[in-house]
Image (cartoon, rainbow, N blue to C red; front, top):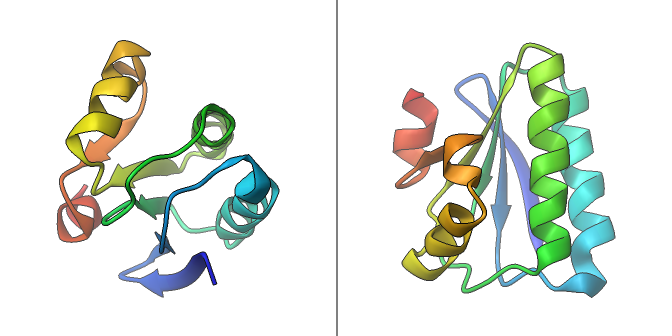
Length: 109
């Protein structure tokens, strides 16, 4: 199983086991939507240990960031490695979205 959804400290946390490529984006979108629909104020995408994600997965992150904002909630990206974080910075997403070094830090936001 690539994605695991759990509730931790009033947040919906999606733990990802491996890199996300195009063939898994639909499943990724579905589980993030499921987390949003749970009605929590925070959805955390835990990328700890994930080497890379494709551009379609990044688009999915942006889509759900905007959707959670409209609902008065927050999407937080946790555990991004340096190369993924650099890509997010080049895209300007570090100014748009919330990032945390790891899951415990994301839970504190």
